[in-house]
Image (cartoon, rainbow, N blue to C red; front, side):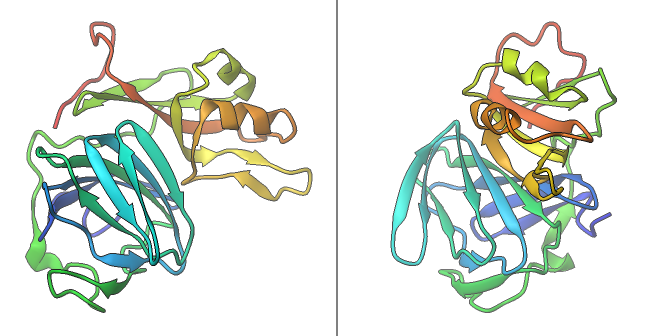
Length: 234
């Protein structure tokens, strides 16, 4: 497991902590304070799935930018320079999934806090997790586990028959933890670390197969939590 498994990494823009890690992905929660921004950086050898849970953000690239409002998503390819700035007065809450889960795979091109070309933060920037932090556990087949974080519901589940997803809200966002879709030549089509909508997954599943099923996390705005077996807030 990661050296950051039980700690909060403090940043000049806020903080982040590891929610979940496997050999394939790492899921991180980030809080970016109002007016602060991450470095303009890239990950040469890993893709990043980005989910804005709440607030308004501006995501900048080398030559352009886009504004997002929660709940929304992006997929960032390997080597794509990007930076996130919090526009909301209360800051923003973000989930990032990195595949593979290598925090050292980082190149900072520019940074308002003097970290240009510097590596990822070391142990001196790590403080203990608090009881409010949300960490996720691998779900058992047929037993979804749900969590709450900033008015957002995260549901982890292992699905053997992906055709069941046709019954879901097509606009819902899912994050793939394991399994996924492959071509007839076993080339990955939707793989761990990808963030897509149910509609996109179902469209691809009409052609491509899921020999291992899929373990996923569904992200949606909170409903009533009376029936949830697991729930936490941070």
